[in-house]
Length: 288
Image (tube, rainbow, N blue to C red; front, top):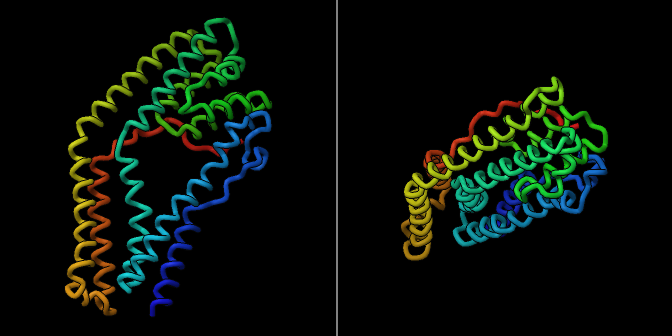
């Protein structure tokens, strides 16, 4: 029975690994990124996801197997592995500060473009010139954009791919302005970029204010999650006989229902405190 439970835990962990870890190309030609964009920093950006995902699944694998062995409940191993995958991500995405840093970086890069264009540089030359000094939050995406421009990809297509790489509504505003300048030679682009940078900074300030107002709600969600998990662990230690009915086949089905209801309730609570993401102006296209 123990070996069956361990096998079940390993099977579930392998399924989670297959779902989470996808091969990420390290060769820029295979990834759809021109060779000229393959700076060491950009190559690291393409290699990191597989390594990070593999390491992040070590904990779910261990948690699932340990719970399955300790409780002798296959469902407990499955639920524990899923919780170890989902719960940390919910905490990480509950704050708007990471998004705010990226949006602030977009505003800084917009100002860099504005200043470079004001020095009578062309749009393509301005993109390439600002790539080395782009903020860290979007440095790799700007490096890839500059590489595409240098390798001969049309500016409009490169900008649309850049917007997809950054994946934020704020960058769509900047990209739309740049596409208009590249395709219809829009006038007063420098003034437009200045206005967009100011608007983006105001958006950052608004996001941070909203994030601060939701701090108490996020704390309540964390308290509910931590308390419920600790209470379940305490029952397993000091009142295992109370949970004995869950060891039967019917009890495992009930445990599945309880786990689904608990996960749904926590998911709804996290959704209430998570910062909303506005709609994007540009739809996602295939990267050239």
